[in-house]
Length: 162
Image (cartoon, rainbow, N blue to C red; front, side):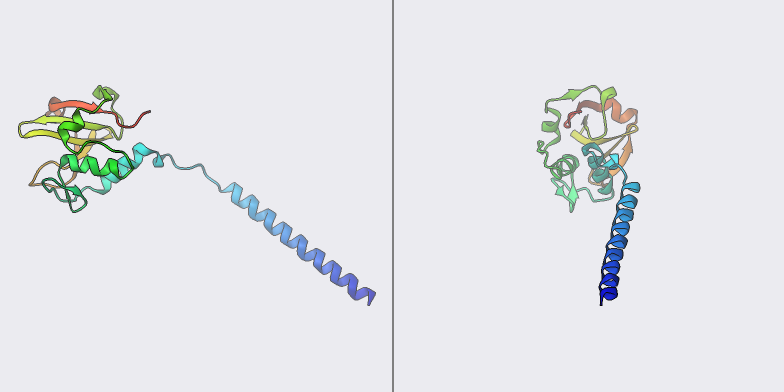
């Protein structure tokens, strides 16, 4: 009976030791493969990602939902998706505070243009490109800031600090 009791104690101790080693190994592996959060998830990059995800959606006069956007409705929708309130029209977006020079523009800034047909806005996504809903005969698209656009740019609005 003494031998059996000693075997039971040894078996119990062995089980605890195996469990301890297993848990220690799991913790070691978890720490080893842990990575820093990806920088893409800062707010400016989230705005860029959402803007690009909306490329291809239809233009709709007065539209501010995924069923269709006009230019300022597109900008309004993207920012409101992150809890940022901005004016609804391109003209009012252009009158917002925090205007900066274009050479200081960063991903997520609002670009405001004066075209023949009126005010127009879009979202700067970096590398001399922006996303906007250009007109009735088109859809949301990514576009290069050509001489045409740069010559008509009236303001760059920095909505996000830093």
